[in-house]
Length: 124
Image 1 (cartoon, rainbow, N blue to C red):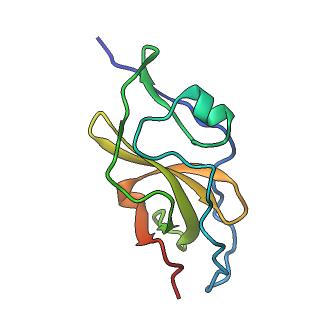
Image 2: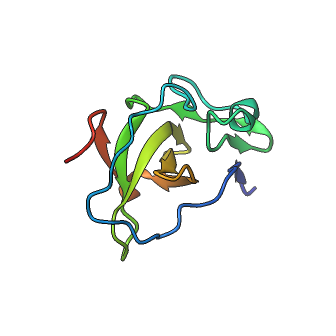
């Protein structure tokens, strides 16, 4: 029996936009993120989460012990790092998945191997 993982994503994926080398990092948000519990469809609709992990309609995500929100670089292979803010982090079926917003507010998801976490202070 094949297990189908449904990853609900609202918004557009972060494109490999031409970013200038030293982005002007904004302050971290005080809302619009989720931490300490798995996201729900309601969280997505309210703009607090990027995805909800479900299989056959049953939620299965577990929150990761990661500071949310925080700065990061999305490091897709062959592309320059894209500055993002991590707004969600969950473990699902052995995969660490992060919900992101770029500096223009566009959303995306990434695996841990595609992300360089930078913490809560803007990088130089």
